[in-house]
Image 1 (spheres, helix red, strand yellow):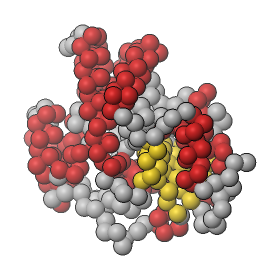
Image 2 (cartoon, one colour; image 1 turned 30 degrees about the horizontal axis):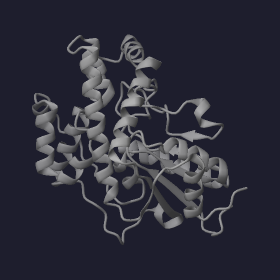
Image 3 (tube, helix red, strand yellow; image 1 turned 60 degrees about the horizontal axis):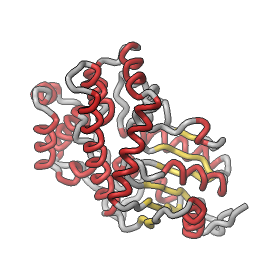
Image 4 (cartoon, one colour; image 1 turned 135 degrees about the vertical axis):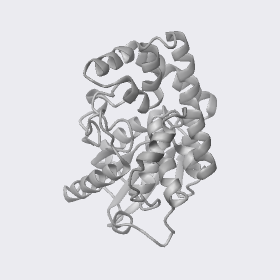
Length: 309
């Protein structure tokens, strides 16, 4: 149990393939926690293998939230994430359990903790039409000039997110950060404890490659075929970014399977580097290096100042 009286929210962050989900589950088992996913694509139903969504077996009986809550044909926004995650945190707290927020979408986590303001900017149809004629490389370069900070973490292969970010920048100049003395309700009520998983680059590259090969063997291509058969257009699939963008290209025979694998390994690694850069800016994160599973968990438990049951 926790030694301090004030309830805590534990935030577990790190790049893709770093082992966040595994640590979150093992920690939740020790401290009676429930997990809230902070992943911008795992919210969608049916995007399982391609996003590396945790399986029921891997959950080991721990309650998970913010998975499979949205139709992939429709857009799920950061505002949707905030609404559902805030409601979920309150319910977990009322049950006397510990909320554990786990994920690699830094923008979601910053917004949840009141460290980034979510502007209410209405869609600009004229601008969207203009931007729709540009490729992802051109969109990313535009965003980088308008808001370099947002560009550091965004999925640069996701045209929908790029266009929305540019739309906000055109309206406001950038997505404003909230000053340190401005806290939201979550930060005021709970003690926020952040931990990050730090993995050497070469090891992370190997993990990304191994995990991609495993996903392919598990049927990632068939998953994309089934999503399309159920009405998910290739255009929408591409807008979901990373794996699904190149799965769509492969299924439409624009690239070979070998090309898809090569491109994905490179793009996922680029995304992981951007995640690392985003989280390294946060000096409140305690970085842990994974050794053996037992040592890693014990280091986390020690940092969180908890006692094993």
